[in-house]
Image (cartoon, rainbow, N blue to C red; front, side, top):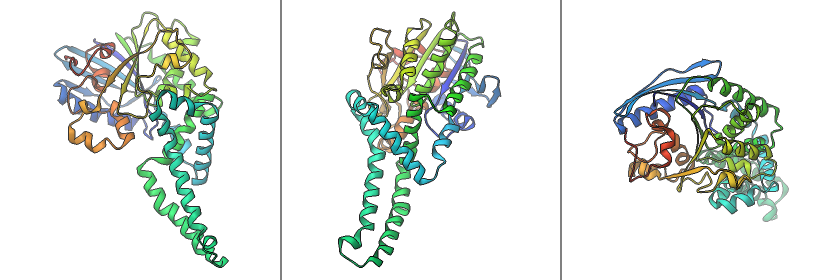
Length: 380
C-alpha cells in the first residue's frame, strides 16, 4: 500500500480540526513505539476538500503515504451546547421525548440493552436532581412552616442544583449528552437547515477528496460520526452512482452508532443510505465492536436493523480494550464510559488486533483488519 486517502468523521466532541490533528499526532507517536515503525505526521492544512494532514509511515512491510481529511462537527456541537441552562434542559428533554415517541428507546433495549441504559442515564440523573431540588424547596410545606421559610428553602434548592449537582454532572458529561441526543434527532429528521447545509458542505468536500489518486480510500467514522459518514457517502452515491468506480473503498465504523439515529422512525433517508453503501460493490463495509464499550450496538447487524436484511451485511471485527492497554491504564479508565468509547481513535499501549494509527497510516490494506485477532495480529 503506497498511497491512501482517509476521510475521517469524528464523534460528538467539542474538538476542531487542530485539536483532532494534535490528538492524532500524540496517538501516532504512541503507536509507532508499540509497533516499531516510523511515523511522521505533517502539519494541518486547508484546501478545497477541507482540513487535512499527511502521514508517512515506514515499516518492514513497506512505505505508505496517507492523506487524512477531518470532517469534524465542532460548530454543531457548540450550537447545541452554547445555550442557557434552561434551554439546554428543555431542548434535551424534548429530544429524549422524540426518541421515545419514534420508537428509539424500544429499539435500543431490544438490540443493545446497555445502549438503552446509556440513553436513559443523563435524563434520569437530571430528573433525580430536579426532584431533590424540589424536595428541598418544599421543606417548609412538608413541616408546615410559615411561608417566609420558602425564601431560604428555594434559595437552598437553587444552590444545591447549581453548586453541587452541576459540577458533579460535568464529570459525567451529563449535559453534553443532552446535546448529543439533539443532534441524533436532527440527523434522523433532516429538517434542521444548519445540519442540512453542513452535510452538503461535507459531501462537496468528500467529492473533491475522492478525486485524489490513491491505492485505497478509507472512510473512518467514530460514534455519532458514523451516522454523519453514512449520510454523506450515501448522498454522494445517490447523486453520482459511479463516483467510486475503479476505486478500492473501505468504510469502517469505530464503535459506530448509526442505529442511534437509524432506529428512529423519521430516519428514512439514513436507512436508505445505509442500504446504498452496503450495496456498493466497490465498498468493503467493516464495523469494529468492543464488548466493554456501552455506547454502540455490540454485534448488531446495522444493515439488517436498518431494514435491509437481504442486502450485503457489514463485516464485524470484535476487539478488547484490555488487549490494547496495560492493566493499570485500563483500570484507570474502565469506569469512564466516554473515555472507553474514545479508545478506538487513540494510541495503544500494546500490540493488538486493532490500532487506529495502523489502519489509517500503516502499510496493510484496511480490509485486512477484519480478519485480525489477538492470536493473529498484524505483521508490519
